[in-house]
Length: 456
Image (cartoon, rainbow, N blue to C red; front, top):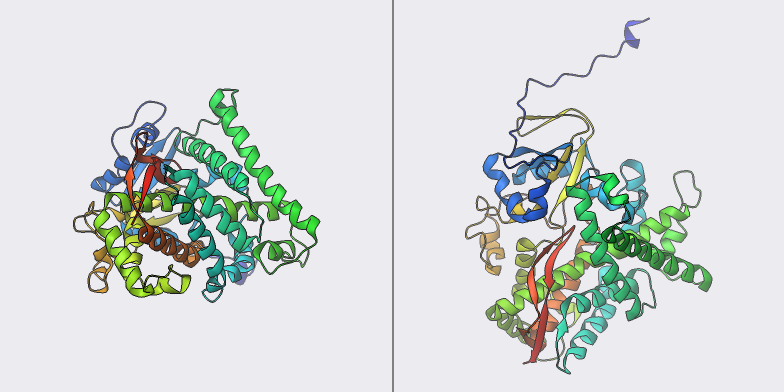
């Protein structure tokens, strides 16, 4: 054996402390019970116990990260990968071969396939479709009556995603199916994340049967989309064509399962998060009519009274600030998880290889250590002279690093256009039957927001 053949041992980490354990555990369920009962308040209070805190979810120990700088370190470090309770619960929907759940070279290859569709210079090409769908939405409301904001938000989100990215002839019936199924699936997946009792979820209980039916319909919906494109023989310049013609590292066509998982990742989480944010925006415009009026005035000053267009969006400063403040207070993706791939250090604490990490953009973005009047809806905090005081990583609703949502610019343009269009046409008031407390699942949005549009 030569000296050169002896590999040096990896450097040992210095002696590090174990993070403190959060209080409030219950037998068997650990902290999962609190994450089911009042998850937002529970996550928001964790920083009082430290920047890194240990939790018990069923039999598992999970490390909760509560400080903005440390969540940024986790998102940017190669020591942590996409894995953990959130992604395990999502595998039944997203599979293991889509861009949302893959890691390493597979993820980088998949990002290269989908990224051209979301380049900044590609987004204006979607403008006419966004305008058409958003104005069709507001036209439907002029006839009065009650708006079911869940249904309406999903309809516009699904139709725009399908028409822009899949060039799909997407009928409302499919949007309704997606809305109904996603509500059931994401609620069930959240339960599976915080209470990982695997055998329990295989029992033939009514909730499990409902979950399985909804999940099966989602996958059937995606199979229909892919089959229709193949049967048509058409190859429009869109994301679905790019997937059908993509190759793997060896130059071979990618597998059917990967195509399926990629379409699921494009259509379902994207539609869910955009629809959830539209619901929150409608709630904000109802609860803060003074800001709705200010948006209306700003839009009219830019457009001169014509319908707002995609090209107007970049000039709507207050409108965009209303959207950003909505994303701060009600981020659709309010909880994220990662997994350590090596023994590492975080905030002076030891994180062992294989440990699951959990952190909450909702808690980070409402932390009084980062935001004055942290619970107050204040769009002006995003004016340049004030936003510079926000700590780094204290506002990242689309995440950061190589796992940043690839559709962030697409979504922001769409959501700004929705905000401008609906606030210009209508004021809103709640109606009987509205149940607009926050519904917590994998995503965050009002439970059942029912509004009456009042033409301006």
